[in-house]
Length: 334
Image (cartoon, rainbow, N blue to C red):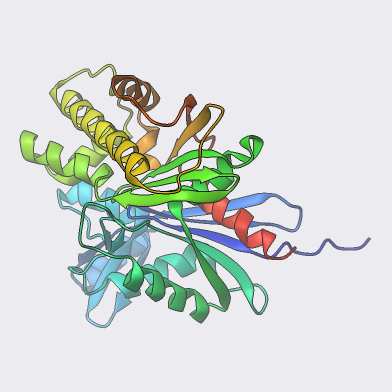
């Protein structure tokens, strides 16, 4: 029996909250690996080391520092009533975290691995240029391009919103609006026949919600995140905490839709959409209960310039960007 050739090409979603890698195995099945993009530092001593080893908590020691990485760091932070340290802020490498890059290299290598063959293509997500901050993506993009080259890949970047379109709108000939609703940013792409007509990001995302809920309720941001992830329906809040989360979700959605409208109307050379198009949202921030309903309600409030056929949540919201990156990488192999 002839063994099937491994389908080369990998996709990597470099998110503020989660890192997600996607590849196909020898049988053509898509394999997705993800890790929370967070860490927490703890004292280096024999007791702590033995305790973490016994509990099978992943950690690394670098010099005089010991780090708990990924999902385990988030769980430990809530037990200790601390906030996790975050390698990324507002969708890009955090300038406030000196340990950000070495930690992210470890996390990425853990889920992506080294290239399986020399020059294996890897498409990785980058934010669109933010329209409401002075940050730019150049340093962030080039740093991760260098990291992936070090792992043996030929890297190519793709806008997060565009990756959502590639993953979700094949049946619509890749025409529509893709929004990657992340922790640090919302990334938007208006696409016509797979070509980005408009792409940008805003500096508000899930972290913006958590920070504001934390401020008005006097709780840790990590606590606000935990409440969201336990299963809130923002359309049907049950208590003060859930009500605050719903208020900031609605504000964030209205803000994003209003900016899409303004950018589309003020930009030259925008395509004309003769038929209504789909608006598809992906990302962890879009996974909360009632999100789709809020988007539909806010769309009805404004005279949106693009005819919308329907609002959808991606079939696999947390992994859609990585899957779009994977599809692009595999297309490089012909």
